[in-house]
Structures are given as C-alpha cells and as structure tokens.
Length: 283
Length: 283
DNA sequence: CCAAAAATTCCACTATTTGGAACACAATTT
DNA sequence: AAATTGTGTTCCAAATAGTGGAATTTTTGG
Image (cartoon, rainbow over all chains, first blue to last red; front, top):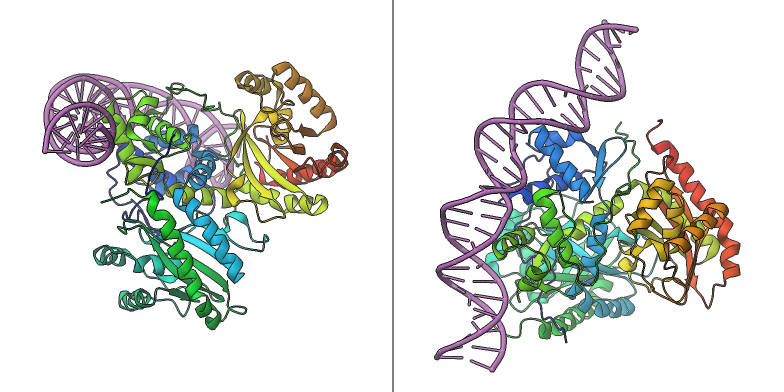
C-alpha cells in the first residue's frame, strides 16, 4: 500500500524569478550555484520567440564566452536545449517529457479535474485552472468544448496576476503579509483600457473579491474576453490557485457571468473539500 | 527582418539517457558535470509515479546525503521541483512553463500542424506526430475529434520505438549505421502477443517499411489499437520523425488502414517539402 | 512522553567551474 | 583570389563551488 499524502502542486509563494522586461540582463543574484546559472541560460533561450544564436545569448547573460559555451553544450547534451544546424539554440524535447509527467502527476490538478468538467457542463463555456507562482498565474488545466483551439494554448502558459480573473482570485486568498510582498513585486502594465494599473486599485478590487467570493475579468487582459473566477487554496493558504469560467464578450454578458458566480464558488469549494483529506492531516 | 533559418525540432539522435529499468540505479556516467547530476536527480523524481521522499531518492542515486540535499534544495529553489508539506518532492510548475514555450516555439511542429489537420479531416481518426529521441518516440502533437481525451494525454509522452507505428516509421528513415546503434540499445519488452521482441524481426519489418513507405502497428503496443504511419525526416536524416493515423481495432480494420496508407505518405511528403526551405540551404 | 527515523546543517577537502586568450572556420569585403 | 571581420570552439592555470562524512535538529509513531 503505497499511499502518499501530500499537499503538493507547486512552489508555495516564491519570489517571481523573472518578469522578462524589455532589455532585462543579468538575473537577480541566484544563489543556486552552477545549476542556477545553467537554468538562467535556459530561461534566456525560453524567453525569446525565435531560436537564439551563440553571440545573441552571450549578450544577454554576463558570462565569458568559454563558460557560456560549456553551459550550452551541457544543456544540449542533457536534452534541455537543442542545437540546430545553423548554430541556433531552441528548447529541447526532454522538457516536454518532464512537463508531461509534471502535469499528469500533479495531485491538485487531478483532484480539480472532475469539478472543472462539471463546471463546464453547467455553463457551456471554457473553464480554467491556474496556480499562483510569484506574480504570475500558471495555467494547469482547461476544459473547453471546441477542439479548434490549439492544445497547449493555455496550459503551462503564464499570465500576470493583476489582469486575470484567476490571478485576482488567487491574490484574494493570500494572507495580508504575503499579499503585500506580491503586490510590491508586480510590474503593472496596461493591456487594455480596463486594465488595473495601480496597486491601490488592485487592493480595492481584492477587498471586494474577499467580500463577495468572486473575481471578474472585465476585458482587462484582452478586449473581448471576460470571466468569473473564484479562489482555491490549501488550509494554511501556503498554496493558492483559482478557477474561472471564460467567454467571449459578444456571447457572455456581465449578467451571465454574475449568474454563474455561485456555480464557480461551489466548484472551488468542492475542490477544497476534496483536497483537505489529502493534506497533511493536522497542524 | 528577423528571419532565422533552422532545422531544429529536437536532439538529433543522442543515446537514450535512461530506460527506467525496474531497479536501475546509478545512471550511465554523465559527463555533463554538476548540471548532469542535478538533472539525473530530477529524472529520478520524474520517473516515479508518486511524489518521493528524501530517503527514497537517496536510495536510487548513489550520492551522499549532504550532496543530495543541496541538489534538491537548488532544484526546488529553481522551481524545477516542488517540496510538499509532507517532505515529498514532485516536479515543479516551472517545467510546464518551459514546455509550453518549447512546444509553441517548435518549428517542426508548426510546419507539420496544418498537414496533420488535413490528414485528420480526410480520415476522421486521430493523427499523431512523434520524433525519435534515442530509443524512444516523443509525441509532439496530436489531432483528434473527441475532446473527451485528456490534453497532455499524449503530447510529451515517450513510447518505445519498436512497438509503435511512428517509432518504426522513424527507424526506417535512419541511415544504416545509426540504425544499428539504435537497435543495439533497444531493450525489447513484450507488451502484447503481437509485439516484436527480437532485433531480427524488427530489421525485417524495417526492410518492408522501407520498401512500401508505410509502417503499421498491429496491436503491438496495446491490444485494440492499430495505426498506419509514415516517416518524416530532414534531408540529411540527422533528424527523423513520423506521423500516424490511429484508431480502435473495432472500428478500424487493417484494410481501412491500408486504404489510408497513401494519404499518410502524402502528408509526410508535404511536411518534408514545407520543411526543406527552412533547413540550412545547402551542404 | 520518549525513542527511532528522517531530514537538515556544518565544514575541511578537492574536484569543477571559471575566464582570458589563442585557435579554427565562415562569410564578407577589398 | 587574398584579406578581413564576425562567430563559434578549444585550452589550461587559478579560483571557486561542490563534495561527503559526521553532528544536529526535526519529525514520526509507538
């Protein structure tokens, strides 16, 4: 009998490692030694849209040529990077293999899944599950009817906390002390005319979410996209996430979203109930 | 004008790093230094179904306690692992983020995608795209009608080459010298009564695939599942992959598969045609 | 509450990474 | 065609960062 109790599901609330500023060079001093440096290189390649060439990477990381060359060679050898015939580097296939395992083995996702389906069946719109990681939300799962949209379209993607329903819902579940830290780290940026761009406005919004139990995205991230969300968290709130029902503005009015608010909260509570027994029993 | 020509898509044909034997300890001597050791630890956690505790990991890697502890701490700090409240370790969310980028940015997948859709439209059955990595096939994409099946169900998953259509198709595209090396590394294992379990039989099958241009999976990996596949490769065959049309045996007869063989080859050729101009122009 | 097991910290030793400079290879330019 | 510049690769002494045995703290369970 190999049962393993665990809270799990992701880093608690570590500082956001990067925010990919326009010309962001040298990462914050990683104290993760050699590994940290290698991963920083990996991250540079990951944050570019096109494959990068050696000198290009060299410019973005402040390391000597010889060193960078060895790091890249090691990453390639390990399958984390792939070296193309034109000497450009792109992310390696081994990452996919790791991610597939990470996804399939994620306890939280597994627990939440049936509830996401139920929510989808009841609303008919796309349902998302995302967890908080620093100042980002990472999407863990989604359920939608139309197969047309690409598969990885959301899963694994990271979005800012301050302009997504799931993000704001998750924030609302944080203890005040942690919330302050996270808000201080947010790099606000205007995506649409409705985007919240000040800490004060965000705090006001969070107060309201705490009062009502629901967060809304009123086309704050992308024009034409709206959602209702609700927070999901572990008992001690060391781990926070959110679920949402999302739809296109032309089809989903704010009133429709409000009518689903209860369902979303219900689903979130159901997930937390299922999660509780899996957590460390006490303390 | 930022055009980047690249072959890309994955490690060429590196030795398979692991095959997850039942009680496989110490990995083959990694010469990737500190990084290699850290990734080996990550791999140990990845290859377990349940989250692992410290001592459990300690037993599987031959490293001293102190060392392992620091490696784990670093991996956690980097978000590659996550430390659960009960002291068990599971794969971290950052891997999902990396994988989402790796997938979306993969040139080969992008090129192949429309052809996979066409093939799906013509056959009505599930279409897979997988690339060869050592003695495994890693699935890069899939197109299917029924949304019911879970998203990551295949993508990122690794299957053995010798008992999958895509795998055998890919093998058939390898230069003989490389093929010998790969076959020598295969750890044959019987999955069903139809599984090919000897190198000789596999070679015979590959000869036939080379002659006809199509590979079949005759319920060799899983009873009740059949497919037709065709190889896809770069001009110099340093990169090989395969595509397939898969269906349940009760619905898809061998005759039906044979009737699709031409379509699959057509799609494979179309992908290679689209790929050619993107490769390094000459040599 | 106490004992046993598991996880974490510590620090002298040493293997690995570092990084400057020299080398090879292409693609342009003169 | 020869020279030049821009890139990528290799080398090795010096320095740093990783190692691993043992001691310490925390957690588990009887």
